[in-house]
Image (cartoon, rainbow, N blue to C red; front, side, top):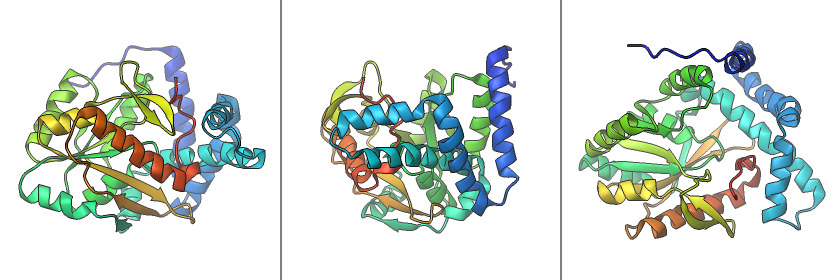
Length: 289
């Protein structure tokens, strides 16, 4: 039975505006659509939504000596990447086809293939970096069944079509919650692949570190890996200088130990690649609370 949404005027109106912008962009050829989306978000939406203030505040915390010229560049570059990512994801099958042949680097792919052959589940862990759906798109295009755990948006109208959109890149999709968790566990037990993002602040998360500062981090990815004997593999879709193509980095699996140690290794991995491509991490997040 289709889910019935309770009418919320403000949420409905904001969803109409956002959908209108996205659908207008989707009418433009892909090679122009993506940079235009970055421009719209960085030059129009970001100043209105206060993204620049958040980027500046996070950079002041982590890089207090960063030159102001570089801060100003980051204030534009970070929302630009976010805008490109959103419209890439909304491009669905077209995006998947564009990135299907992305160069794959790192030593982790062979471990994933071996796990699949023996029926072992694999948890692919990334963050809001580059385009976080590139690993799922590339591996799904190669015939792997890659599920995704996602946190539903607070706007139910936007969330409904966003879920349909990300399903076009790969399935199954598991929304956070009791039912989604049960389906996700079944998927892992059957030897499936699952994508999880771990770089949002969680109120009751473990007090680990990220960029040298305490950052509350969920231990769920490592706990699932230990409980269901899954590989825990850091993966990243690194945007290339042309702004359209990607490199898929698949690192070695994290060795099994404790949830805290394994999750700290995931934080360290994300930090290391973010330092190499500083403007591709989502500095808009309130990561350090």
